[in-house]
Structures are given as structure tokens and as C-alpha cells.
Amino acid sequence: MFYVYILKSKINGAYYIGSCENIEKRLFQHNDGLVLSTKRYLPWGLVYKEAYDTLSKARRREKQIKSWKRRKAIEHLIKHFKI
Image (cartoon, rainbow, N blue to C red):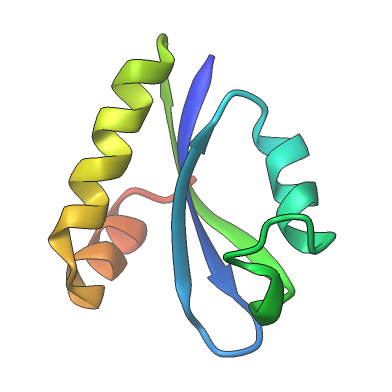
């Protein structure tokens, strides 16, 4: 199973959108400072995830969510489709 996920920084409320195969391992990597793009906003909490049967479908959805560019659209998704 592959996932699209949204993390929220507990420091400043910033969102990070990504995709992976092992969501628990990936969250650990983010919170352990191993991901350059999220390192300075530690710690992160998982606020949303979607499951897909292929990585390509998960990446397509990740790109779609990232293309929204509006914080309100992301927050609407999180609010109405809780994990």
C-alpha cells in the first residue's frame, strides 16, 4: 500500500504534503530531522492520509493536492476527511 500524507508542524502550523510506502517510517524520518525540507519545522504530526495501490497513483494525488496552493483547500480536505 502507498500513501499520500499531510503533516502539520507543531511549531508554526505549516503543512507538508508527501507520498511514501511506509507512513510510520516516513513520519519518523521527518521528525528525526532526516528530511531536509522539513527539518527546521520539527516536530510534525500526521493530520491526513490516503491509501493507494500503486506509487504512481499516490504521486499523482500528491501533485494534485500540491497544485491547489491554497491553505484553505488543504484545511478543507483535512477537516472533512479525517484519518
